Length: 395
Image (cartoon, rainbow, N blue to C red; front, side):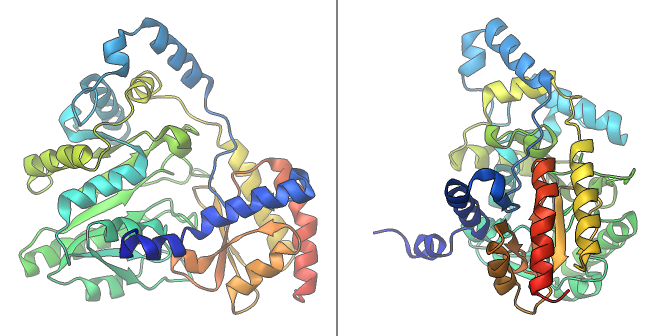
């Protein structure tokens, strides 16, 4: 018999993953070229050549114990130093290896940070729409998620409601920019105001409130858009990063946390994150992939591929009468459902072999998410099907 908590999770398993599995079944039935699966954020752009070259070089030229063995729970010291130096060059910071904890992707990093911070009953604030797994991560440590209503005009955080919902139980806030599912980048003005609110509330309540920024899409920004470095706006920020999207390595599960020295209880927080890495069962991030990152710190994927998909899809859908938020970053497009029940809209779309994710998965009903990290041919060939869908709905 499994736990009651897991019974509920199994019954309500990830909508996105379920649609991904459904897409595989549909591809087997209708042919992969006739199914337009926009459900999962699985990068279609290959990893940079430097990554494979680094793997080969590291395997051939590294001592076996170092290659495959344990290291500090926080990760290889030299890799952490390389990452710190890279961030210092990018953002004018002064980090060292001591500020970096290597993690099993961004998801592993968020769970490590939450394990280090939360007591049972603590509240965690998130701005809808957001990645639905945050709810499960907070539940893992018996925290309570507090959801801020989305501003569906700009999809910037609703800071008025945010200020009202901070209480003496608020332990941390999670933000995600560029955002999944909207592709919106949180502006400097938004982050400045958010930091001011948090500083004021810390003084009023007499407690530390950490801001965790989830940044797997940091390098995926278009039209010259800038993704602000959040710790510059609030000192009690913890940055979670992953190379899953920026280097197209989702299956390798490699990322890091940045814990700035200015953060409250810095030494205890770093120690807690190291211990959390161990006791959550990660022990340490994958050794080989850490070493690969150390060699490929300046490597990048070709985001012009995603940009072409973004523009083609956005222009095609808006011409058909669909209402969309044009993404500034990431590789998702958030489209307003033409009918009130977006889940019904998703079901109607399946008649045309279009797989979309309902916005309620991201705590934002009335919208659907379209992941355009697919082949360009998939985007182009899907548009006639979207045209048929639009015609059925009278657009």
